[in-house]
Length: 137
Picture 1 (cartoon, one colour):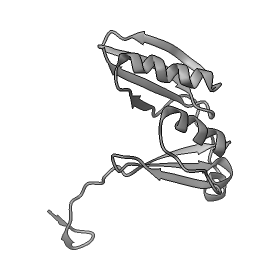
Picture 2 (cartoon, rainbow, N blue to C red):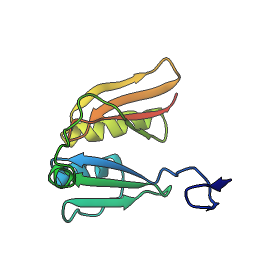
Picture 3 (spheres, one colour):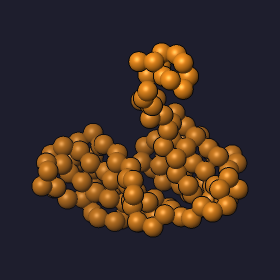
């Protein structure tokens, strides 16, 4: 397909390459995601990122940095987008949930067998974002 704006043959699609998290406490947010099992180096500064095994980049920006970029930025209310982490199996949902609870992170909903055929749980990250854990039953 010819892209009229660029005058060349280019796909008119975009590839999801990164997910960003705005955080009030960078080290604590990184600790949460490490506890989930992600390999994340120590943060240094107001922006931090890591490339995940599938190639997707997970990024953190401090609230301070976001407000420098966009002075009108406001923390969202509610849960517009959710992160969901697939566990090895149903028992692993309980294990990961327990590990997060032992590390002092707050539960939203303890593990349960969902009607759609998955073991499911929800926890809050340090900034109050709900993070889902799931695996097939």
